[in-house]
Length: 195
Image 1 (cartoon, rainbow, N blue to C red):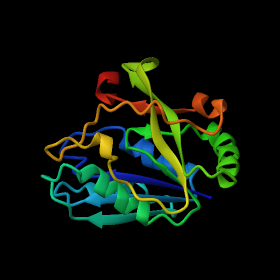
Image 2 (image 1 turned 30 degrees about the horizontal axis):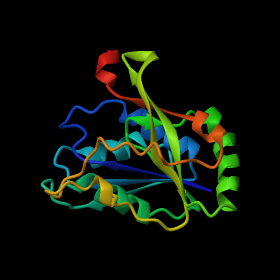
Image 3 (image 1 turned 90 degrees about the vertical axis):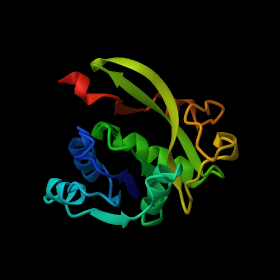
Image 4 (image 1 turned 45 degrees about the vertical axis):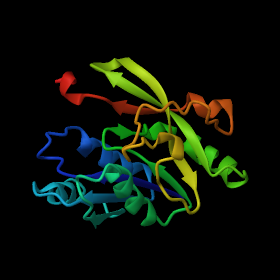
């Protein structure tokens, strides 16, 4: 039913923390987990393989996009998306996860989406700050979709120089029901501040 797809590159070199819990949680939640790893020289692929050795429902896709490409992140995510085989796809960054107790809600949402002309649902994401009791913002991200899809920046998000405006507000995107807006993905904005 569910594919979760992630993107990664040079996790070790950049000191990225918390990704281990994110990918392990994805393996517990989804039928399939796809992780696209762009060319890394720091052992990122090996670290992910070691982290997930107790699970069998994951796959690594290796990519080789230029780090100078302003669309790098989206291209890596799209490669992961294209490798997904389940009907419903969930895109998560490696500092995000879905609480396991929410799985029945996502299954219900899947059934609603299956019989709707809507292809994608914008889901609320809580950006935590310092600890689990405080947050910096709640944003909507297009995490959840069905069928065949492709990731690319929308026309409105493209700057004249070819880069992406990451501060675009897409709050006009709606979900199938108001209940969907109350479901939360927890995003750890800066795990280092928790230490």
